Structure formats: structure tokens, C-alpha cells
Amino acid sequence: MAAPICCNYYSIGLSASPSSSTCAPIAPSFHVLSNDTNKRLPKWKCRLLDLMGRRGPGKCTSTTSTSGAHGISIRCSRDSAEEPKSKGFSLRDCTFCIALAATIVTMQPSVEAASAFQPVPVLPDLSVLISGPPIKDPKALLRYALPIDNKPIREVQKSLEDITENLKVPGERALEPVARNIRQASRILSQNKQAILAVVAESKKEHGQELMDKLTVGLEDFQKIVEERERDAIAPKQQQLLDFVGGVEEDMVDGFPFEVPEEYSSKPTLKGRATVEMKVKVKNNPNLEDVTFRLVLDGYNAPITAGNFADLVERHFYDGMEIQRADGFVVQTGDPEGPADGFVDPSTEKVRTIPLEIMVDGDKSPVYGATLEELGRYKARTKLPFNAFGTMAMARDEFDANSASSQIFWLLKESELTPSDANILDGRYTVFGYVTENMDYLADLKVGDVIESAHVVSGIDNLVNPSYKIAA
Image (cartoon, rainbow, N blue to C red; front, side, top):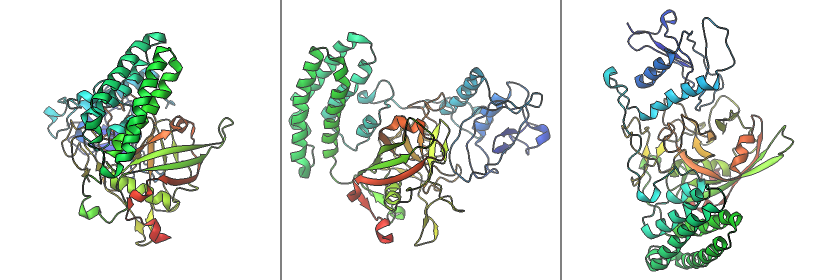
């Protein structure tokens, strides 16, 4: 009879009822924070934890969360029957633990034990336009996530984006590859101006033409910067030109690209993008009194989730709320005072929830209510991945895909378990935007720091069915 696998918050028997006396040894553990301690982990995850547990004798424990917060958590710990409980593992042991856990993303779950560890590729073949190292820049991710299909402007964009990799080469050796990318972008733009402008929405033609003119002149100036070997001026100029490119690409979007499912059509919905400024008062930090973050919400790929957040921002729901979690892995907030763990809609006196909402690269509309793993789409790439420092997503109950309400988190740490382009969170939690300014200061936030204010500074006209106006 196989022994049960006990992991923090869960106890799972492979073929027998869990028993504390027969609990298999466990060493470093991967766990997901949840309010429900009676749910079962998928068998394939338990087999992985079983493999971890074979590293040595240990004592299994089950701990119940009392925080009331939904969320995700990764940590290394050891409860040994033969050794006193220590504060943590050595870095080597912890790395071993997480490296094993990282194999989750390359395993195809199955109810059959014989096939539970059959590896499958995580990612599909990537488009030639976005091949190469993982994209981690939040603005670049937002540009690539726009619902457009114009190869010339994407090629101009890629030539300019690639300069980021060029600049990783030290000294003046980076200048020649930078110059090549500038020449390539200039050539593509000059040869395809009409093809690019033809796709710009009719109502935005004038603005699109203005941006194209700025881009043309800017590329000429960029070439001079490189010729004069002003390396320090390259990155700022690159970002300016990419902003022009992103503006042209946004001008190509004409209307909203799909219909939201009828069952969610009455919820606040962001049909486009919006920008939020959030000011946080930082306590007990002599070097930082407050910081203002700029958040870009992407309603093209997560309209219900982005709309829900924008609506709560305009209700001033987050104003005065404390940061409730800051562990170096994520920063989390949004759990209001009182018994409810989400926003209680005054019109219904119930917690307003929204569905899990995942846009897959290549799909025309998001999938709702199920993780990509549950749908068997193990190769799928999400349009809004957990690649960037400050990726913004909804916390929810691990076993209820449609339980998200108001609790949000920003991902900070890229670890062996959460690498860019192969992140176990992709397809399991809804990403609906990125921090695009001052994101590095997220790492300085601590529990108890206070959100002084949050407000939508642009794009509020894209919010459909806003409940904050009814409340007002």
C-alpha cells in the first residue's frame, strides 16, 4: 500500500487514506496557499512531492492558513523527526527542491501512474518575430499583446527591441549590432510606410501619420548617436522610438476585437486599455517615503478582470488599504477588513467575483473558468505571461477558478520554479496588466505600507458597465 504524501496545507493518499503514522517523508516542499485544507492536489504534483520526500527521513505536517487571503506561495522548509526544526535549508538544498518542482512545467498530468511523469514540451514553436530570449520588458509585452496583424510594423518593432540584447555586450563592441538593427528598422519602415498606414484605423490616421513621421526622423537621429559612439544615449532613444512604434500599433486597433460571453456581459468590462497611478506610503524606510506606480491594464486580453480592477479603483476601494503580503516573491493586497475576502457589492450585499480569464496566443478570445492545464492545453502560450517584474494578476482560491474578487498580486521573483516563458503560474492565474514605471520599488514594499490613492489617469472611457457611477 502506497504511503500518503503530506505537504503543507494538504494531505493526499496515493492509494490509501492519509495517516499520520504512515506519512511519507518530505523535505523541501512546494505548496499553494489556500483556505481549503481538505482539497486534493493533482496526483502528478503529489508524485513530484513524493520524489522530493525521498531525499531523507522527515516528519510530515499539515498547517492551516489563518490569513484568510487567497494567493500563491513557494517556500523551502523541513520538519524532521530526528532534527530540531530549523529556520531554513541551505541554498543548495533549496535550489534542489525548487529545481525538482520546476519539472512541473514539463510534466503532463495523468491519472495513470505509469504515465504521470511523461514529459511534454511546454511551449509551441515561437513566431520568428518574437523568437530569442524571453521578453521581460513590460512595455514590450504590452506591445506584442496588441490584437494586430501587420508584419512590417512588427519587424520594425523587433529590430528596435533586439537592441536591448545588443546592449548586454560591454563597451563599444555593442555599437555595431545596434547600428545593424537601426539600419534594418529604417529600411523596413521606408519600404513599407504605405502598408503600415493602410492598416491604421480611419479615425486615427492623422495621429498615425504623425507618429510615423516622428519615427522616421528619430531613426535618423538614432543612427547619428551610434556614429558618434554615445553609448549612454542609446537606451533612452530606443525607448522613445519604441513608444512611437507602440503608438502606431495601438492606432491599428479599430474597435474591440471580440464579444465578451453573455454570462459576463453585465460586469464592468474594459474594452481597450487604461492606465492607473497608485501612490503608496512607505513606512520604516529612511530612503523612501512614498512611491507612485504606473499600471497599464490590458482589456484587450483580460477585459473582465481589467474592468473589475478599474471599477474598484474608481470606487476608491484600494485607497487607505495596506500591503498585506510582501515576501520577496509577490506583493499582495486587496483583502478588505471584515469577514469577506473580496469586494462586497452594495447592490447585492454579496462578494463580487469574476471568472478566470486567459487569452492564449493565437486565440481570438479568452478562455473562461478553467486553467489551461485543466483544458489540456499544455503547449499554449498566454498573451500576457508572468515574464515581467511587476506582472499584475488576480489572486483566487486554488480550487475555484471563478473566485477572484479584489485581491491582486504583483510577481517579483524569477526563480527556477517561475522562469520567464515557462512559468507554472501562466494559464492558472489571470494576468491583466503590468507595472510600467517605478516597478523596481515594488521590492521595497513591506506589509503595513499603505496605498494612499489609486486612480485611472487614462482610458476610463474604455470601461463599460461601470458600477462606480451607480454607487456615486
